[in-house]
Image 1 (spheres, one colour):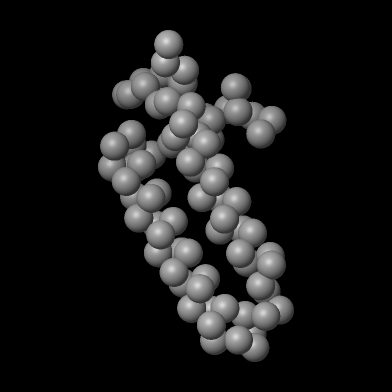
Image 2 (cartoon, helix red, strand yellow):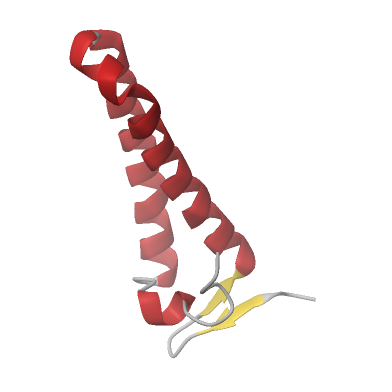
Length: 81
């Protein structure tokens, strides 16, 4: 059984929403953890750039395969997440 959400264009599996949540969490988490440190430490800034690069590639792959996943698509089943 495949679980996910049907949009006008394509079926988007739940696993994609999980990946998007993971990307968002990593992106925001690294910034919150190292906000003060990043001003002082070049290594922290470099690590943030690397995380951003990985997240960008992952997000681009999702957009290339499924199209832009907007708020309307996420609304409903995932509104409270």
